Length: 317
Ligand code: MRU
Image (tube, rainbow, N blue to C red; front, side):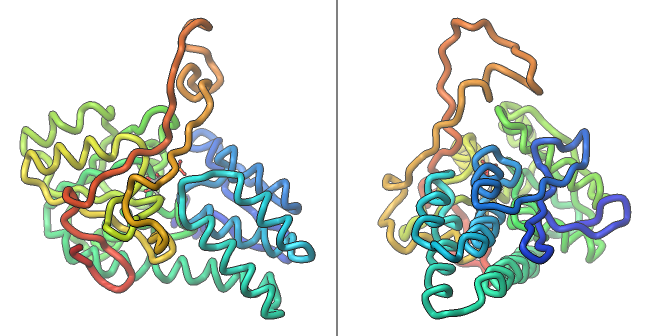
């Protein structure tokens, strides 16, 4: 991704140190978080220094490389960071096999990260075909370069269509409570892609006004029948899209498809801290006595999905 004319990836390796764009600080400050230990990596994943399923997977792969002397313990620490994104578990398994086969762990993790980037680029090339001139696209959360090292999943088709000079417009859901939609707006702003940020509950208004032609979202885990988990609020956007006759696509690489789960009912949904709801930028906006629930994801049944944009093409069911 281009930031002020300079190419960046959301995370990168320098010898045995892993650097991350600190996503907690965006869009106000651009800071780098550097991880040298397994605990640094686990903290980065838990606290959302790094976030988005494919990027979390790559962070875990590098974590396994840092802790390659004791892969079982490292895997146990990393598995407990966040439960929903399948990429995390996929990367740990990939690295466990590589270490068992005697491969150089840092080389294997770097290859894992490069594979994610090239898969996302291919997602962009396939998905770009869905975007015609003057298409208005709604996306939820952030499934851009920040979430995937580069290109993005949902944002990859948008970025490639823009590079191919197609005129398009993006509606980015704000995505309460962590406001990942602001990260999407930040990426689009730096890429020069026309967009607006909307409150989560404004999407239906724009759909009904026929201001949205296409919805593309990412995914954190996709079950064998096509049900998928994504950022909380995705399900209601899918239902609204169907009601309004708007195509609804899910963009994800193979590392997000969980071959062990029959359907979405088996996906574990992460519950995050109350403070994510009661505070904004460290400022408390609700009284202390208030009781809140904060599920980070929901599951959308496959019947709402028009297709899955993958590195191998657009799959229907
Ligand atoms: O909690 P996050 O920010 O890590 O969740 C990420 C998402 O849910 C994204 O929407 C996404 O589509 C998956 S990552 C490309």
